[in-house]
Image 1 (cartoon, helix red, strand yellow):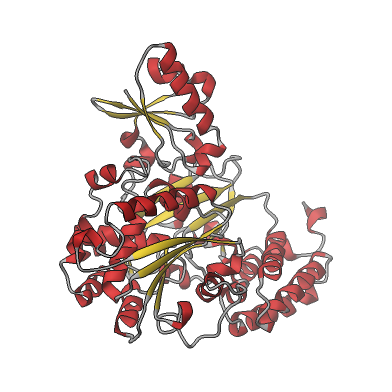
Image 2: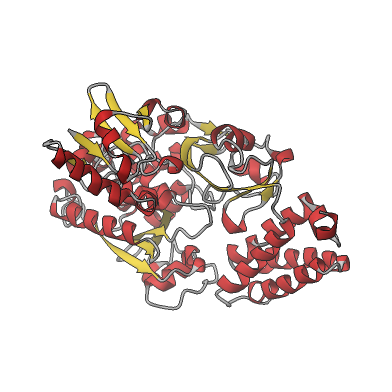
Length: 505
């Protein structure tokens, strides 16, 4: 009897370890032999811990499970949900990057290969480096970390640069509110990230990689470290990748949790042992990155998607999506929402479909007032913009950002002036201090919002002018994007910035 209990951090926080122990205890009482697999999460966080039992018909899901209800796993009962793949949340998805997450034992290379793992790498090993770059370019893959920059162009720049050493750096410093795709992928399918980094090395001539993970992700650090050791022992990493003439090795590095280290140049400084502050550009990291050498810096999801492209082909991947937003995107739905979790789908769903159909509306049952898309620096979208298709250019046209595709939902009790203040305060706290618009502007922004909150509406033009300065003058996206939540709150919810708001309520 094979039973799956997630070891994903979200599932563990909800009691998965105690459930796993109870499963083994119950099996022993019944004299049954159980193979317990600690898999990744399927992404249905409201059902965690989600226990699955392998049957002749497929895997049957039970959840949310508690130690007291573990007998149902063996006997059936109200927590039996049916076949996991047939659940509406799962059946509606297009799982490419996350196809194996929640399905396999994360640290079983045998499981990984049985579900298509390493086939993309084997194909890439038979191609010249320029052809590998072209395949990624043809797929239309863009950076999933937030910037949306074409991955193929970045790889081509590094491939054509002349240097004695080149590097692949994976930005796993996932610090945006409402985002957890990187963590879920690393905990649930670490070998796909390793495979993607090796392919990036083949494409660019890089022989060394680093995964920079924030210290708040101990489970991801543990799983990725173990996966790298296994990959090295089995010849996926090392002096001869899968017996070829190509070399590639990698290390796991742990950051200290500074939000600004999600910005690629700050990350590189931290990786070199320096203070995590933003570098001026140029030079670009693709030409002078880690230790002054040409460096590819890509997000976890960007690199983890590469094996899919090589396994299925660029044309297959590019067939999904809309406009210049090709492929799939792992939506991370959080906040005041009925069904929160990870949902991978092709670009193109409207924001309203995501919030109301997939997310099920607010958890409180009250009307949805706003959705912040793209982390703490993303714009707040009101219901009047819920017809916006989920795509980079489509959101940009509405003064918004897709970012890392995290969505945080608020009901009609949210105070948008307080949310605008939070954005400025967040920037003031997390600023590296290098540039004046961010370092000083955010502090002045908090003070200005406080003036408005006290009834001084004459400060509103000052706030908009301050946002314009930060947007145009900041060195990186921290100061440059902070105006998005502030201005969107001000423009879409002006009533929250008027005096006597509390009295009117």
